[in-house]
Image (cartoon, one colour):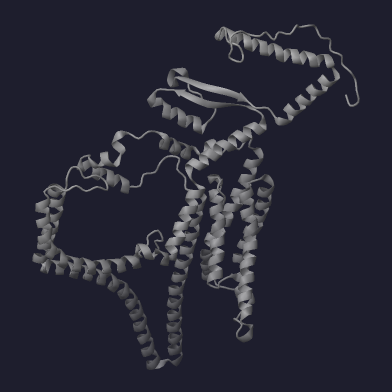
Length: 548
């Protein structure tokens, strides 16, 4: 995906990457169809390299299979959309046939359903592409003009406009720090809350990443559930076979064995349920135990909490000066502060030990819980290079910022629009100024970005100035100049008339200049010179020559 990828094709890219994620997962865990059908055991000894060679060839084969789909999406032309449609339809038919006949031809109905659930994301992605690519083909064929700049980039245009607008005086950090406490708390809560802006759309790269990760998570969950179900079925089959053996034995011995098997079956189900309940109760009991420990040591907890709260209040209200700003600290009552800090040092030493232990425990717990959060790095600042996942995430952000910068994309979209207008040689309107009321300017600008043909009435929007510019085709200009040169070459009298025409224009220019600056000549000296040329009638002689 290059820097000018449109967000109208992000769903197509996401579905294609979803199919690729399914294939990569099968290749990674050795569950691909080619591996199961053609290689039953891995080579050993001197021929061990053949297995690696086969896996390498399989990866190349899957890359080749997916390449036409990405090519059709990236080119965005009628030819490639048509070829991509036929290819995706064939790919979808083969995928469904594989599930219906190849994988599930000799298995039970329950296993067929299991296979269908396993490859459900891949089938849904192929079906989605089978619908989207024909739609893109029809849209490209019958649409008069694909105007993407005013439909796709409205949000980024508005974002760039907000950057250019001057910020109000109360939006600076110093002014924000001087606001009342309640307003600052509301502002912090508003920052934590997610608010969706109209027109915002995630980029194709982010959507593709989310889709691929979601499919991988689905596959991992499927394998875990399938493994648990497999062992549960194995135990049930074992109990059934033992029960059949006891029935064949018969008599009191067989009946007693059957009774023991029923007890064992009940015991297995009870252990399974008790395991889940025990895990839940263990976490609850540990939480209650920690709470009881805090209650038993309540004097220590009360004293520590009181001292910490007292330090916070004194620093905030007594020692902190009103001249403290962002990045600058000013202290009031310095002597009292120094004495207070000295006496609090001994308490803070013991509290520091407790805080260090708590920090280690919290870091270990959070590192385990949020191991999948690549945007958080749990290493110190100078050791962040050890976290490869975090660096991969940072690299993705760098690429995303370089490819989806709103200012740059708006600039490139304007350049592409102007280039397309010049190539078409059509007359186009360019908005050069507003004379709108403040409350109406924003609404008019949004409507004009969404629809360039929008024009507000003078009563509601005020005076809007448009500058009309016309650009001609370069070929037409070259042809006209060639005809002019040929006509002048065959009519010498016209050459003289052409010179008289330019001299007359020059004299008119001098007359206008003398009317504005009387007594000044062309070179800035007093006096003037008249370069008048007598005008005589010229008779055009049309000469016929070769090629005329």
